[in-house]
Amino acid sequence: MKDMTVGMIVAVLEEIFGHTLFWIMVAVAAVITLAYLYVLIRDRQVSWKKFLLAQLAMPVGAIGAVWFVQAVTRSGFGDIGGPVDVMVLLGVAAMGAIGIAILVYTVQSLVSRPAAR
Image (cartoon, rainbow, N blue to C red; front, side, top):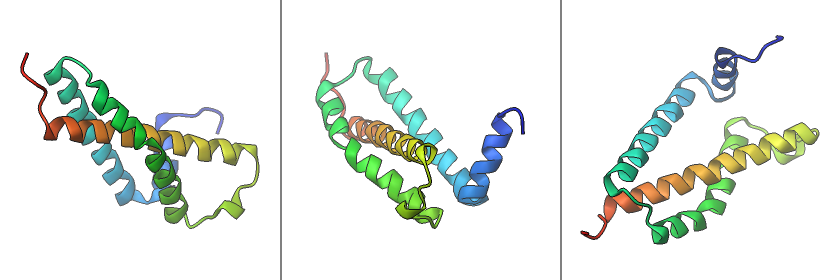
């Protein structure tokens, strides 16, 4: 395994999460991303109030992502073996925080339309 390819990463993630759960997560992420792009194009501006509320949800997303990965992989914090494991866990937390911020901003924008200009 000299090179890291997209196919290899997909195969590893399918092994970790299971085939069905992995592709469900990919589909949900794609739908949320498309909705976020729709909101940004529709509004033509960022609502800083909604952005602040989305940022306040980030710690919940970080903790939720770490909990989800720990539950799905049947591992615990006692299984952390070294610095690489800590970096992976921090990466999972960061992705969870960013993901929940995008989700919260998108839901807020879809529920309440911007004021007419």
